[in-house]
Image (cartoon, rainbow, N blue to C red; front, side, top):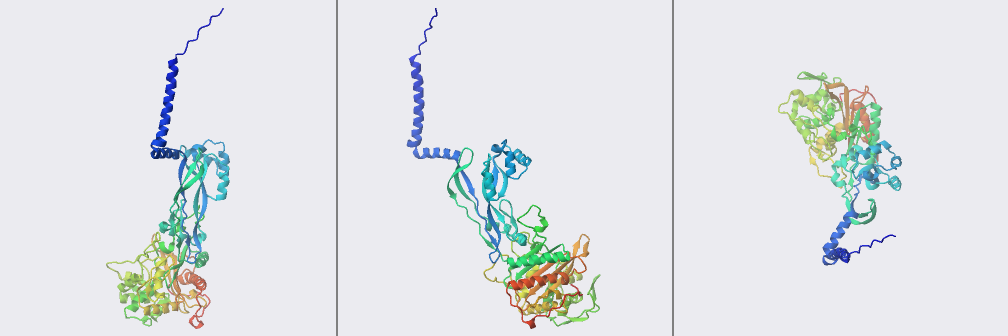
Length: 576
């Protein structure tokens, strides 16, 4: 017979103790809630709200639109287009079974995706792809890969492509200017991002926008001085000339003769700013402003200015260049042939080294140097363009005779193509030198008179004769218009000094010469073949560029009697 063990009775006091403790805890909780919500209502609610928002509310950046760059007629040269960048939280994505599917969607090797996840292990952010087309990005995001998100951004696009690339420049992947005018006007073009708040869920996904804290402010637009029509024309003609002559590189720059605005500026080689995978750094250089050259005989008209200002010479003063050569120090300077007794005008027409040498030895180097300096040689252009060079105008305490002479015909100093064009613009504007502008101007800027109007007119007359039947630039002529200019051919400098087989061909011209509208400078570096001089390769390029530009600008052709009759291109002599 089993025995029942009596159950031990629970002491009543234990029950009451436990119940009292639970009631006390409940009272403390209710008291805390009462204090936060009622007694300390403002501070309590702020505290709870802040704590909640710290766990659910986030602040995001609103991307700002970068200013548009246009040509003078409003044609877009640089615009910003909306894109979506895809990023991931590696802590959520790593180890996912859907990694092969994600790699396929991104068109990325799986090994590369695994490598990135390993590199960013422990991080909360990494880009998967930048700047995807919105439609494509949304298709990927719609598949809801774990830890994969999208971010709205802007990508810079250049409608003109390589045609204006070296002037306009480009931005980096984050939209900041790093070359050209994109860089120099970065503060003007870039927008200021805004801020917005949104609520996120437990997975970090945005659930709902709360509101804009600070609106994004777009960048300001920039209107350039170039005319895209002229830019395309010069780009095409320069490419054609390089292909024909085998030149290593080249530049063509055109200024408005009245305002100093740059109407077109092209270089070769080129690059496409919309496709930068295989960009050669050398092709990004705006050679018209960053490269300095010895200008050679294109400086002889400036030397003629010094001669005319001296009062010793007029354009009709006769200089005896016999026997076709002259010795200065240990160096003999020859002409292609003995021109005999010729006028100052003919000295420039034939580009006579002997004639210019005699003028330089007679008037001295100081008047020549002074004219060069007044015309902006060796002076900053002040455009603010990255890498812009000032050229070099030497100022020696003591000058040897050969240095005085070589200065007069364009050796021993350097200029950029844009500086040379600006100097010639003083002839085209009646002796007034105006600042160069890369931006479109609403009014003609005030210039500085550097030579008299009469001397400027005399120089234009001589420059027109250079393109005449007896000049070195017959191939620079333009049908329907009288033009003027000066050829130049210089030997390039190598490790051992001047090279016999590497030349630079130049031409600086004004059109139309009787009522100037444009000033154009052409440079071709390293043309190949028997014809490599300024008159043979640079002058024809000027002719094609000037003809197209004058028609695009609606410049009325000259009266027939004002135009020198064109002749078929022919080989010709003459120092250039």
